[in-house]
Image (cartoon, rainbow, N blue to C red):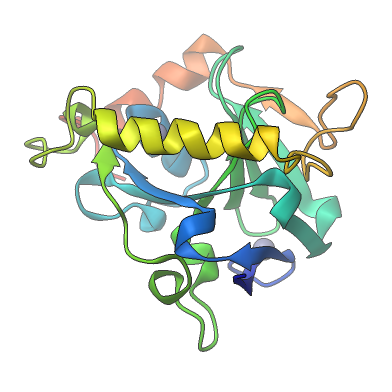
Amino acid sequence: MGTRAEFRCRCGEVRGFVADASPRAVNRVGCYCDDCQAFAHWLGRADLLGAQGLSDIVQVAPASFAFEQGQNRIKGVRLSPKGLYRWYATCCNTPVGNTLTPSVPFVGMFAAAFDQGGQRADAVFGPPTGAIMGKYAVGEAPPGTTGVRLPLLLRVISRVLGWRLRGKVWPHPFFTRGNDAPVYPVNVLTREERDALRPYCGPHPAASA
Ligand SMILES: [Zn+2]
Ligand SMILES: [Zn+2]
């Protein structure tokens, strides 16, 4: 049995919580991919990226995630027609969750969203267990972050599969049960808009944020 972990956007207008939060209930994985970097730059929130462009992500079960206020501020963006749904709070451009459709049930949240008051993501979810997509890291790829990280991958897949099997998909915070329609407006970037973000991203950014 975990604790209830509160999260909020930077300005505090959007708030919610993850129920039953514990290291065993989540995947905490860092991602260096250029899509995650591009998303932060698109929001004007490069401050969320760690060293070498790292996104520090906590994946939780959709049914464990609930908004308490500010839902009218939520919008989604996809960097390409088939890309992840990247949900964010429009009040202050804070990411609130990355998802696929409900058939692959997870919500990937920036760990920093849980650092508030006396609460720390590290204490609630444990430290990061690894990172992936190191070939896009700004500069040299950090050791152990490139290629197929089989143990890490298997852990992530088995947890997501477990959520699906154990009925942790619904209620899903971002999709409607029955037709899987997004709850909030979603914008898909054009190819030109997506390409305009590439100079800011690893491995060798041509522009600075
Ligand atoms: Zn806000
Ligand atoms: Zn990524």
